[in-house]
View 1 (cartoon, rainbow, N blue to C red):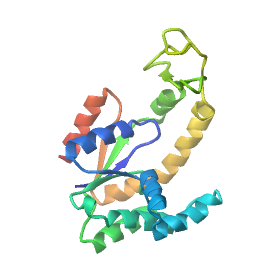
View 2: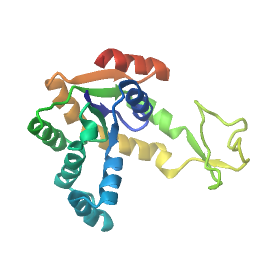
View 3: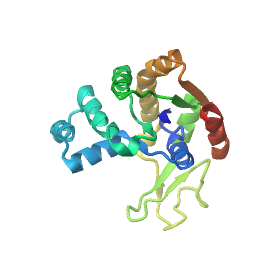
View 4: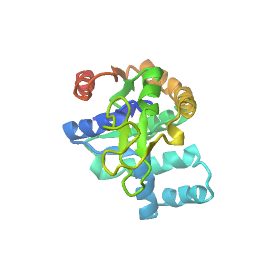
Length: 215
Protein backbone atom coordinates (compact mmCIF):
# COMPACT_ATOMS: atom_id res chain seq x y z
CA UNK A 1 0.00 0.00 0.00
CA UNK A 2 1.32 3.44 -0.97
CA UNK A 3 -0.02 6.32 1.14
CA UNK A 4 0.51 10.07 1.18
CA UNK A 5 -0.08 11.72 4.56
CA UNK A 6 -1.23 15.34 4.59
CA UNK A 7 -1.86 17.61 7.57
CA UNK A 8 -0.96 21.06 8.83
CA UNK A 9 1.60 21.89 11.52
CA UNK A 10 0.18 20.75 14.86
CA UNK A 11 -2.35 18.38 13.25
CA UNK A 12 -0.81 15.36 14.99
CA UNK A 13 -0.03 13.60 11.74
CA UNK A 14 3.44 12.66 13.02
CA UNK A 15 1.87 10.65 15.84
CA UNK A 16 -0.63 9.05 13.46
CA UNK A 17 2.17 8.25 10.99
CA UNK A 18 4.07 6.23 13.62
CA UNK A 19 0.93 4.26 14.54
CA UNK A 20 0.07 3.65 10.90
CA UNK A 21 3.57 2.43 10.02
CA UNK A 22 3.43 -0.02 12.91
CA UNK A 23 -0.02 -1.27 11.92
CA UNK A 24 0.74 -1.71 8.21
CA UNK A 25 4.38 -2.80 8.50
CA UNK A 26 5.56 -0.36 5.82
CA UNK A 27 8.34 2.26 6.01
CA UNK A 28 7.57 5.92 6.67
CA UNK A 29 9.46 8.16 4.30
CA UNK A 30 9.88 11.80 5.21
CA UNK A 31 11.66 14.27 2.96
CA UNK A 32 14.10 15.10 5.78
CA UNK A 33 15.08 11.43 6.14
CA UNK A 34 15.51 11.02 2.38
CA UNK A 35 17.78 14.07 2.16
CA UNK A 36 19.91 13.00 5.14
CA UNK A 37 20.33 9.50 3.67
CA UNK A 38 21.12 10.84 0.17
CA UNK A 39 23.76 13.21 1.58
CA UNK A 40 25.29 10.45 3.72
CA UNK A 41 25.41 8.01 0.79
CA UNK A 42 26.66 10.73 -1.58
CA UNK A 43 24.12 9.86 -4.28
CA UNK A 44 24.20 12.01 -7.46
CA UNK A 45 21.00 13.84 -6.50
CA UNK A 46 22.07 14.08 -2.87
CA UNK A 47 25.28 15.84 -3.91
CA UNK A 48 23.30 18.14 -6.19
CA UNK A 49 20.95 19.03 -3.32
CA UNK A 50 23.99 19.71 -1.10
CA UNK A 51 25.21 22.48 -3.42
CA UNK A 52 21.98 24.41 -2.76
CA UNK A 53 21.84 23.60 0.96
CA UNK A 54 25.45 24.71 1.51
CA UNK A 55 24.53 28.11 0.09
CA UNK A 56 21.42 28.28 2.29
CA UNK A 57 19.16 28.17 -0.77
CA UNK A 58 15.91 26.26 -1.24
CA UNK A 59 16.43 23.00 -3.09
CA UNK A 60 14.51 23.31 -6.42
CA UNK A 61 11.62 21.00 -7.25
CA UNK A 62 13.47 18.99 -9.90
CA UNK A 63 16.25 18.11 -7.43
CA UNK A 64 13.78 17.25 -4.63
CA UNK A 65 11.94 14.99 -7.08
CA UNK A 66 15.24 13.41 -8.17
CA UNK A 67 16.21 12.62 -4.56
CA UNK A 68 12.76 11.09 -3.90
CA UNK A 69 12.99 9.06 -7.10
CA UNK A 70 16.34 7.58 -6.00
CA UNK A 71 14.74 6.52 -2.70
CA UNK A 72 11.55 5.09 -4.22
CA UNK A 73 13.54 2.80 -6.50
CA UNK A 74 15.02 0.90 -3.50
CA UNK A 75 13.80 -2.72 -3.05
CA UNK A 76 12.78 -2.28 0.61
CA UNK A 77 9.74 -0.32 -0.61
CA UNK A 78 8.30 -3.06 -2.83
CA UNK A 79 5.48 -3.78 -0.35
CA UNK A 80 4.57 -0.12 -0.01
CA UNK A 81 5.39 2.99 2.03
CA UNK A 82 3.96 6.13 3.52
CA UNK A 83 5.14 9.51 2.25
CA UNK A 84 5.23 12.31 4.82
CA UNK A 85 6.19 15.82 3.66
CA UNK A 86 6.16 14.93 -0.03
CA UNK A 87 4.60 16.00 -2.31
CA UNK A 88 4.31 19.60 -1.07
CA UNK A 89 3.25 21.19 -4.34
CA UNK A 90 1.07 20.32 -7.33
CA UNK A 91 4.18 20.05 -9.52
CA UNK A 92 5.68 17.49 -7.13
CA UNK A 93 2.40 15.52 -7.04
CA UNK A 94 2.29 15.28 -10.84
CA UNK A 95 5.97 14.28 -10.96
CA UNK A 96 5.32 11.57 -8.36
CA UNK A 97 2.49 10.15 -10.48
CA UNK A 98 4.79 9.95 -13.52
CA UNK A 99 7.53 8.38 -11.42
CA UNK A 100 5.18 5.67 -10.10
CA UNK A 101 3.61 5.12 -13.51
CA UNK A 102 7.06 4.30 -14.91
CA UNK A 103 7.31 1.61 -12.17
CA UNK A 104 3.81 0.29 -12.93
CA UNK A 105 2.59 1.56 -9.54
CA UNK A 106 0.27 4.23 -8.15
CA UNK A 107 -0.79 5.94 -4.93
CA UNK A 108 -3.60 4.13 -3.09
CA UNK A 109 -4.65 6.81 -0.60
CA UNK A 110 -3.95 10.47 0.21
CA UNK A 111 -4.94 10.80 3.88
CA UNK A 112 -5.67 14.31 5.14
CA UNK A 113 -5.64 14.74 8.93
CA UNK A 114 -8.04 17.68 8.93
CA UNK A 115 -7.92 20.13 11.85
CA UNK A 116 -9.49 23.65 11.81
CA UNK A 117 -6.93 26.48 11.78
CA UNK A 118 -8.19 27.90 15.09
CA UNK A 119 -7.59 24.56 16.79
CA UNK A 120 -4.06 24.40 15.32
CA UNK A 121 -3.31 27.91 16.61
CA UNK A 122 -4.53 26.86 20.07
CA UNK A 123 -2.39 23.71 20.01
CA UNK A 124 0.80 25.36 18.78
CA UNK A 125 0.61 28.63 20.74
CA UNK A 126 0.12 26.73 24.01
CA UNK A 127 3.53 25.05 23.88
CA UNK A 128 6.07 26.03 26.55
CA UNK A 129 9.74 25.02 26.64
CA UNK A 130 12.15 24.80 29.56
CA UNK A 131 14.75 27.59 29.34
CA UNK A 132 17.42 25.24 30.73
CA UNK A 133 18.97 23.83 27.53
CA UNK A 134 20.29 20.80 29.42
CA UNK A 135 16.67 19.90 30.26
CA UNK A 136 14.59 21.22 27.32
CA UNK A 137 11.35 19.70 28.66
CA UNK A 138 8.16 20.59 26.77
CA UNK A 139 4.76 21.41 28.27
CA UNK A 140 1.42 22.66 26.99
CA UNK A 141 -0.80 25.09 28.87
CA UNK A 142 -3.91 23.06 27.98
CA UNK A 143 -2.87 19.48 27.26
CA UNK A 144 0.18 19.00 29.50
CA UNK A 145 0.38 21.93 31.94
CA UNK A 146 3.24 22.24 34.46
CA UNK A 147 2.32 21.84 38.15
CA UNK A 148 3.32 25.46 38.81
CA UNK A 149 2.57 28.07 36.14
CA UNK A 150 5.70 28.99 34.15
CA UNK A 151 7.97 26.59 36.06
CA UNK A 152 9.48 23.35 34.73
CA UNK A 153 8.35 20.28 36.70
CA UNK A 154 11.65 18.54 36.06
CA UNK A 155 14.39 21.06 36.86
CA UNK A 156 12.52 24.09 38.24
CA UNK A 157 13.74 26.46 35.51
CA UNK A 158 11.56 29.06 33.81
CA UNK A 159 9.29 28.00 30.94
CA UNK A 160 9.04 30.23 27.89
CA UNK A 161 7.20 30.45 24.57
CA UNK A 162 9.52 30.06 21.58
CA UNK A 163 9.34 32.73 18.86
CA UNK A 164 7.98 30.24 16.33
CA UNK A 165 5.16 29.33 18.74
CA UNK A 166 3.65 32.81 18.93
CA UNK A 167 0.26 33.35 17.27
CA UNK A 168 1.45 35.68 14.49
CA UNK A 169 4.18 33.26 13.32
CA UNK A 170 1.81 30.29 13.57
CA UNK A 171 -0.83 32.02 11.43
CA UNK A 172 1.84 32.86 8.82
CA UNK A 173 2.96 29.20 8.75
CA UNK A 174 -0.63 28.03 8.39
CA UNK A 175 -1.25 30.48 5.53
CA UNK A 176 1.79 29.10 3.65
CA UNK A 177 0.68 25.52 4.34
CA UNK A 178 -2.90 26.16 3.22
CA UNK A 179 -1.79 27.91 0.03
CA UNK A 180 0.55 25.04 -0.85
CA UNK A 181 -1.78 22.22 0.15
CA UNK A 182 -5.17 23.39 -1.12
CA UNK A 183 -4.32 22.51 -4.78
CA UNK A 184 -2.94 19.11 -3.62
CA UNK A 185 -6.13 18.32 -1.73
CA UNK A 186 -8.19 19.12 -4.81
CA UNK A 187 -5.82 17.12 -7.04
CA UNK A 188 -6.24 13.94 -5.00
CA UNK A 189 -9.98 14.54 -4.51
CA UNK A 190 -10.38 14.71 -8.31
CA UNK A 191 -8.58 11.36 -8.57
CA UNK A 192 -10.88 9.90 -5.87
CA UNK A 193 -7.83 9.19 -3.67
CA UNK A 194 -8.45 11.73 -0.89
CA UNK A 195 -9.41 10.31 2.51
CA UNK A 196 -10.35 13.26 4.73
CA UNK A 197 -10.22 12.34 8.43
CA UNK A 198 -11.23 14.61 11.29
CA UNK A 199 -8.09 15.22 13.36
CA UNK A 200 -9.80 16.42 16.55
CA UNK A 201 -10.37 14.05 19.48
CA UNK A 202 -8.43 11.32 21.32
CA UNK A 203 -5.39 9.97 19.43
CA UNK A 204 -6.75 6.39 19.28
CA UNK A 205 -10.08 7.65 17.96
CA UNK A 206 -8.40 9.59 15.15
CA UNK A 207 -6.34 6.51 14.30
CA UNK A 208 -9.54 4.46 14.14
CA UNK A 209 -10.95 6.94 11.60
CA UNK A 210 -7.82 6.59 9.45
CA UNK A 211 -8.00 2.78 9.60
CA UNK A 212 -11.65 2.88 8.57
CA UNK A 213 -10.82 5.17 5.64
CA UNK A 214 -8.04 3.06 4.16
CA UNK A 215 -8.50 -0.56 5.25
